[in-house]
Length: 139
Image (cartoon, rainbow, N blue to C red; front, side, top):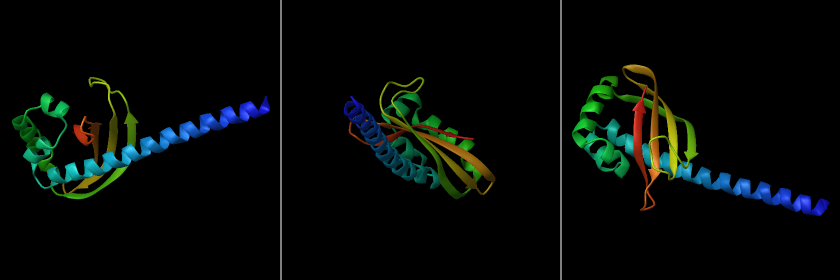
């Protein structure tokens, strides 16, 4: 009986560790994709950031609205000084979004005109296997 318990405990622990490792790899890939996408915004390439966003994002906001929003919210902050990942969270569902695979990333950022900002970037794994931004919020 004790051997069965040990085997069961080992299997549960092993499978939990495997899930955690897979999620960590997905989070790492999503962080990389978000950093590339954020560079577009940092360089004022707002149209290109919209072009490279997830279909879900594009269906929610038209390119002109996206440009206007970034010009209003992001441009006044000035040049990016630094950005560092604060948290990453893997999810399979989010409010108002279809079920799927998501990674929500919060960055701590410092700008010329704002010394402490939090950027939240949500990425979704699209059907082509690429992580793309489905949401962006700066506070």
